[in-house]
Amino acid sequence: MSIHNEARKGDIAPTVLLPGDPLRAKFIAENFLETPVCYNHIRGMLGYTGIYKGVKVSVQGTGMGMPSLAIYVQELIEQYDVQNLIRIGTCGTFQDHVQVKDLILAMGASTDSQMNKIRFKGLDYSPIASFDLLNKAYNYAIEQNIPVKVGNVLSSDFFYSEPLLGDAYEIWKAYNVLAVEMESSALYTIAARFGRNALSILTVSDHILKGEKATQLDRQNSFTQMIDIALNIV
Ligand code: HPA
Image (cartoon, rainbow, N blue to C red; front, side, top):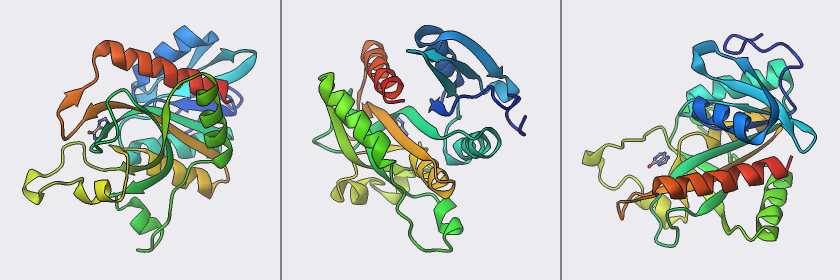
């Protein structure tokens, strides 16, 4: 039992998939895992443990944004000794060479958040994925003919940026950051702090500059591909 998680020790697997949306956690558990058991209801942030190909796996909602994800991830690590944390989520792109429906493996996560500024006393830390998980995910995707892009993403505190400030993404675009989401920088930083493995697998749900959006069917397909990759690297 931790402050935000009512699971008992041993209820949560060493590997946890982390969608932002708790109902996605429910969907994944009920459709991809055998014998799923829900271990958390606190704040509706559902978490489940089940079996995939003989291996115990959990799936835990994190909520949106870094402060929310940081709470769940730190408790998963400190209270439940979770070793592998794999975020599966969506992102928006502002790059001409990235398209809606593309899958991205976030090798690094830049940020506009103050969280690491505070943590590192104003200095710059580079939050990066676990090479082992990234390598496995990349090789599995290639083997399965699932095209993936690998690179830097922006973990932003803003979903709605301030229009009066101009193009919020111009500088990130110029430095070949592939897309924007709201969680990976905190995930990678906290995992590193405790010596754990983390990876974010993201599907591009919208092109911010072109105003394109993935259809419901596209979202469903890329979502299935992300889950397939995540479950097969554990
Ligand atoms: N911004 C932040 N996170 C996102 C976006 C976005 O435009 N699209 C999907 N996740």
